[in-house]
Length: 224
Picture 1 (spheres, rainbow, N blue to C red):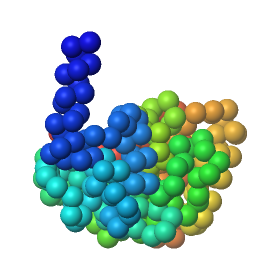
Picture 2: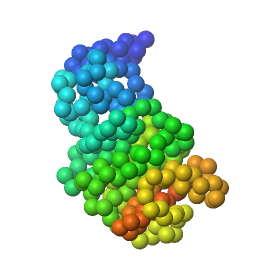
Picture 3: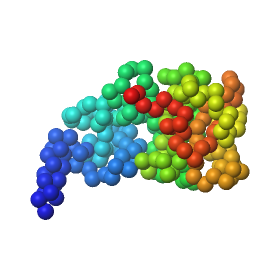
Picture 4: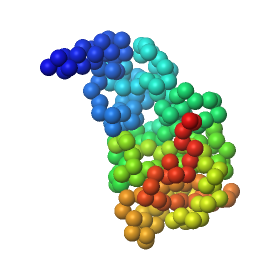
């Protein structure tokens, strides 16, 4: 009883300082809240409904990297934001997330849209050299969030020339990545898999699937 009371006091205290802390959101739903509640600061009761307000919003303190959302690009369907893994890192480290602005649980969700891949690529090109861009989605079994998110990161130079040792194919554009990956997975009897997209040539992309986390396996996903 004492612990529950202490927890309630802590929530109320944090809520009085920073309203969004008063939200009771499970850890696995943080990105869902950001994607659906934090992108438009003009929505009603924004600062109380958003767990991590935009850094350019008018919500109160604290205003540090780990509890704010930095938007890189957005349209009606998708948003790209800075990943929390960038907090405390040097300016040359890049890790972003592209997400649907409506609920889509992950790679297995039939509500996923092919357009997210071009959106993620176009956003990445603004900050990462095209031949180093890696777009990655983790398998259902290897993710911590129940909102689809494409990692916008750099390919690890140590594995860049070894991708042909994995299950992959080439595509001319990013219009059918989900469909292409699904066919590859069926052909290779993979039920749960992640996807990595990189540039193969100036007019081709590589679509690779793996039962492991492509974020961890092929990319520079953390700074230390």
